[in-house]
Length: 84
Image 1 (tube, helix red, strand yellow):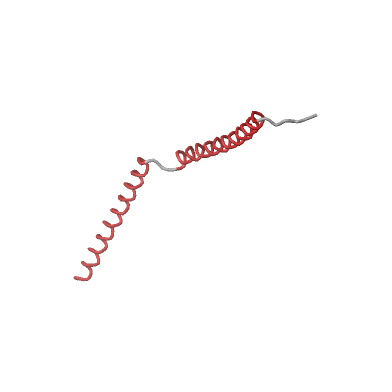
Image 2 (tube, rainbow, N blue to C red):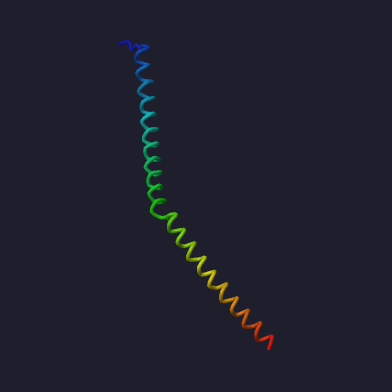
């Protein structure tokens, strides 16, 4: 019983192995894409919007303006006490 290995048989084996590796590679790409999509969803849900950042910035500016006004009033009172 002679076993002959033909070129077609070798080619089919090489193609089968190549298809297997391509399948593994595609599966890993699919998993990475799934992870990236999840990260995008997390970013969308966890990070503040521009509108919210503007509201926080405006609120902070208002608080700093109030503090500055109070310091000016205290400075004016101290100056008036020194003048007396």
